[in-house]
Length: 500
Image: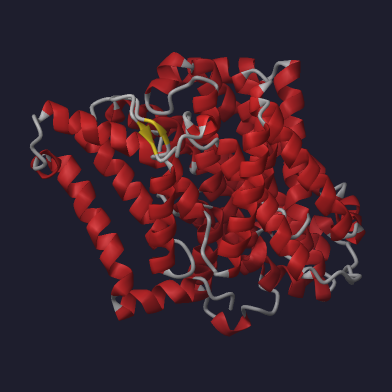
């Protein structure tokens, strides 16, 4: 009964004209971002973060979350029609979807992607509604030692499951932890690593760091790598055929939803890893695995369902534990803190309208996305003809205005420029910026819980292993950091990130 009352509150909140508008704006922007190659949800959320500060918290988070899961839909459109994944999670979609389009089955592929994503999104929203409240109640029983160990586990898991070099990911996380130390120590009032600069007394602005690493640096990389040309678009026909083949792909959709829901909850999971894992499962379960890569509908439906489910269930650890499972969730936590909302289990009890309104808006947003993606598919494809070098100045100007409007300080704009250059260098060195941002967000919280645990134990460091749950999480974190060094594990990990 409580669940029904909470969902009623959620829909009452989400169905207000203001929140409906921002939900629509979020999924529309997300679809657009998913369609355009190179502009992922993390750079877009970073770029639009200052806009949400002038909105009511519920409206701001509904919009930002719509951008995130909306990008998963948009990325599949160009992956199917022109073999150009707009979003990293759509890489797998291109393997089967484009082959279907070349065979004259583009409409079937688009319909299957839209319906599969809608089913996965609906189930994932229900999972959030069912799992989040009991998980938040369990989290209220955590002490400082458990919270510290949980954050260590989350950071290590994000590093271990990231693509690329584990050593570089660890280095980026350490840099993020060190950057989180800049500013005034809350306990002692001592200035740390400010070098006497007054503007650093409050620490490095998360808006400047996030926009520099994910907006401007990514744009610079895309501008450097872009090869503008005219794509050959497959003819769109037979949308109804996708609905007819739904019964054949329903098993793949449900399996993909299950995989995405699980990996989305885990730190370091999310949409991209979910889609690759789902494709690998479907290929292994198939009676004719050799057909994969030639337009198999199961190889499209499973990953498309997985990436949407993974995107939505990644909200669970962020909302209930204050633990970001990917860069977008880290930005969400930063936005919560700027709004004066402490991320963690108390969000459900202290901000019920925000929590349940966000959940209800996810289902509403999924309905909007189905309506947006199929009838307007021609419009999304035409956007690819817009020259990227003309889009670049607009993004940079909007980013600079956003950073300046947040603090009315030119210092943050100069910080943005510096961080953007450093971020571009890191990308060229194949160092992922995501662990850096996660370390920056989690570092101050880890320090706070570390101090509390040591104060309560009178300086006894064994408190972290004496408490069973804390010891278990530290043990799992240790296994995760050692596992990639083993040859067998490393080989399996590399296979996940191979496209075909």
